[in-house]
Length: 329
Image (cartoon, rainbow, N blue to C red):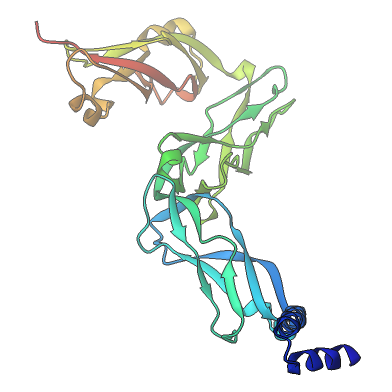
């Protein structure tokens, strides 16, 4: 109290120099006392996304949390519920396929006007892409060797294809999805179970409707009841200007006889073929002269007496072909 009384006396004196010193000291005290009552508080909040169409997906997000700063009277700030402040970015008009800067919006509807509220940074970078849905083939993955003296037939997968969803840049390169390993070690009985599909490396790619399980049926036969044939693959009904080349020139056919017949009686009548009429003509229509395309198509059997034999499996069941449309001569 004596300190403030002394300043007051100096102010009322006629000496201008002492008055200036007194005013300066008074200002410093006022600033110090006022500064003690002003505080700053920081905390992290999630950055919400608004108005993003379901047709799009965020593939890159600079920061999903941002720092909010409160500045003002310490007592008032301490009494505030910090959760009433939210941050968001409006993606009603997104920039596609390249990183872009989006302004951060702060909602402070219940915050007193004398309290400053702002984000530590004004904007964030995001990359947004179109989201697509695609059907991909399911590949059953078998692991281990069945019991000696047994053979496996052709695996049946239900469903054969599943729908996946994700960014176009990732989905366009996915043609199939594997199952988790199906253990066959020392097995002698058929497989008929549901198996989980392998998860994608990128979490942005997901299965539609949680269809990440498929039913796998794999028949297993005793070898002594099975006939194995090695057949060359032939091309049927192919026009002269379309050529097809394959690395697989033969396949193995596993048959189970319904009646007693020797191999000599029927082997020369059975053919493994890839019929031109089974090829997707849309691929060939878009093929330019002297251009090639690689596709995979199933092998079929002709000339087999289905009343006498059951076809257990074809190995491989599908052949990769390199197709070329010859130029006009």
